[in-house]
Length: 440
Image (cartoon, rainbow, N blue to C red; front, side, top):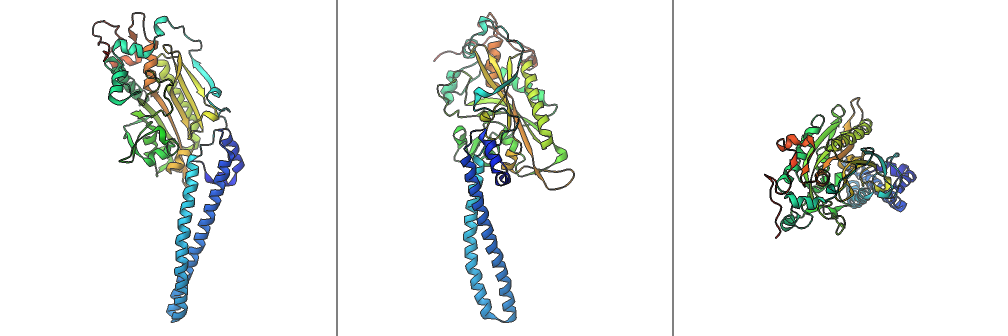
């Protein structure tokens, strides 16, 4: 959440910054009013509390001096004020909760260097690789769901039978490719990121810390009986590993990576890019996450983007880097770079990674602070995260890009060690090839 002191002291600056994200200035005005009311109630409660304490001392003095009449009168006054204090305390708690709820719904302030714009159409293409667009052959212009069915790699029909639509089922070489990608990514980041295997189901506070709740509850899977949430990304549990803690500055940056399944309802996605793996409810992803000082954050953001780009080049996929405009940033983000790969079979750019810098927005929600090496009061940390990578769309782009004239699929060399040295998914009918998924 944003710093309430900034809202109090510079409301016009906050309105201007959030105006870049199309936030109604009235929302900031309402927050200012709620905060003023809460502070007034807290002040009144504290004044009454102080008066009760003073009366208690006077009651004791009167009793010690033998003035029982005065003591009884003061005690009665103290009891009356005590009731008033309790009522004011309840009102103050409700008012402070209203302030927190309003803060939880307000998005982060965009970074000054984030481009202006209202939506995806205003995002800025920073660069693409290779510099000149490749030429794709006719056999690469086949959708991955058709390739997957033909080669027995992907069975969306049985996935739907088991769990419902938009839950993919990978088979044979298809499942092995998914596993190879995960192993490759974890090894690729082992030089600087500690590997974590976090829980997949998390508490409500965990989702609140990263900003998925309360605003985006409809997009998440909730197990009401246990009040647990299926994670939409490993960012959620990784961030909450440090929730409520003070981290020594000399431990930073703290860099973590995790491979998990991710779950998203994709509310409102019906009928829009829902074929094959373009938009699914469950997918595997390797996440990068960092807790850093404010001074370390900018360099970390650049290095995380560079890691993703290196992977995409090693996988031989055409990609582009987008600098997201203020109007398209996620609620928690101050700056985000999206990386998209081109899938020739569906003729679409597919987002496969978002690398984001949240400044202290998540740290304030989760109370994650830094103990400065030089002494002084703890300060809020900065957090960053990025997908490296999300595999469903990478899988789609790989089988489309790697498809050969005979129907086989050539896979990138960096994956061969994770596929027992094999680099080609055989064509239909080739020796060792699994049969295509049969129709029910």
